[in-house]
Image (cartoon, rainbow, N blue to C red; front, top):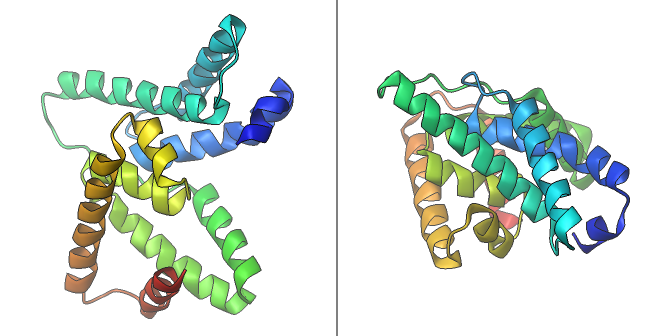
Length: 196
């Protein structure tokens, strides 16, 4: 992350734009949210802050600004919908491609494909989690952010993050255990995650 503070604004933008946009889409689903606009606004906020002085963790600042922008959108939308439920969106393809790519380096292509199917199944279940639990699960397990940074991005205490992460994992385990139609690849994925 420190190297991000040293790179040019153009390189930083090229590196982080797709990452931030994919994370906003994954965390907050589509639901009419313009993830491109939210991501653009986050970059504008970061570059404005950098004009006022150095920003010690630009990627953390950027993610925080993006997540706050998405939350603001959802708060406003919830007020308009008067509490009507919104269907969860599908996961973006970029997430699956990134997962396959990272798994293929650790294993062979066939095993990576199996693990990717298991991961997509589990990530699909993440949409069933309440918003606060989904946020911590995605940041720690999908985005592979360390727990301190994830807590800083979400503006919560590390102990609150650990508690939410524990509740999210327990809820997912219950959902998976009850699902009699889960693919065999889920078991391989869960075994791999347990040993990682």
